[in-house]
Length: 610
Image 1 (spheres, rainbow, N blue to C red):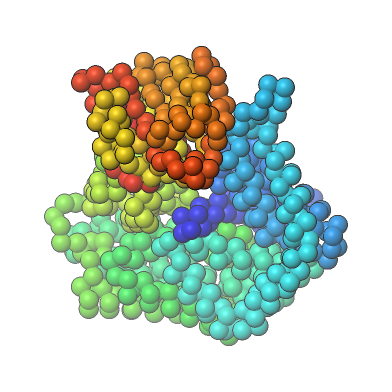
Image 2: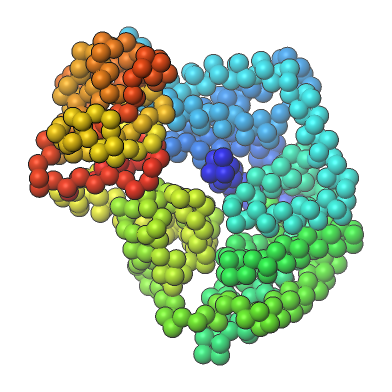
């Protein structure tokens, strides 16, 4: 659940990335700036259609491969849901949450059906073309349900939102505290989205951010207090860490932290600073969260209101100055909080002897990567520090973090990552690794993807079979069938499936489809003969509960559906559903290595052949 919520939080960043453009167009077009009505109207159009943008962005962000078909499915899902619920109850407006629900539904359906194979007479509608069709059907059902159940749900959400707004100083303080505490696990985006886009209403606009730009004179209470912390507080904390650093390291640390402080001041991107002390001293980070809460409370009590299209940095502060209430007072509050941050951080660093940047005991100096090939070098170093590219299942990134799915987390060398520029390292669970790089993370991620692809293409004599199933990995020696466990049929492993769908582990040719449809043979392009045997002794079922989706001699692509089967019916019939994956022509010279983890998803690396 945590991993899924993190993925939603990351997906939300795609539509949120449109907000700076919307805010710029809307503000610059106003009569107090350039007075260009069509520019202001263009910006307003983006704000007016935020739910649709969220439906598209979340659908693409949560899809397996980011394909545009998932975005189209998100659009269809949103329109069906919006118009369907309105036809039942014209007062229903699911807004931002409707967009997120549509995007999540579209993405899940895309991931499930994007490679579906239909009978020949319906073949045109197979694969990705099937996704919008099934999405429309599912959303009709959901629209019918939400048309009746959403009014009380919306009433409950509105009551929570209104309570938080009416709670005044307490509400903004709690939000500020939680906003910072959720950053380590990446769920602050989810909280922000509810506050910014859902709670409160003004002339059709909902959420603190949207209402602020729509001219709501009460909006901005959840954003104003962020400016003192991001523009003044954390830059002052950087100054404290620089002064507290060892004299011989102060110049080096100044270059690092000075750049982070300037980034925070101008843009409001604070994560690289926060991760520089978050794990060194959780107590200091909690105090930072409390200071953030205090900043929001003081800004609220002072009657200041301000807003941003991206974050609470100087760019948004100046751009939206004329929309703000008491902006100069807000800057004065910022100066005061800068002094407080400096005193608190310096005192705690020195008093508790915290090993902030420049105060480490290790003698190994941080490596500064420069030059044209900087990101390729960083990518290579990061890969080496986490066990090589073969230890990486997938590479993704958000604004400041590399988000990696790993095979073996024990191979991760945190110290080496930090020496090569990582601001922080988070092991979310036994496969989910996050490396905080900074605002240039996308260049590092692209370099890692390119290097991984190039390395895979260059790996002659080395190939990887992906898992044909989602489930739990079982070593071959533990399979309750001696023909498999003894290795008599070949080398490999086994998977206890959780879903009744078998996929091709690699590109190749279907060499065998057993008449009972319980087993399939694939000859890969490298010449490896792979046996996929669904269940033990299941030949006795004579094809019951199995549905083949390929024929013998057919060319298949990695990830293509081979067969469907009913796990419950097979188990109820008394059969073990364990599915061996065997290389039947593996001789003694072929080394077959299985995965370290015990759970696996379709498409994850299962067997390494070399």
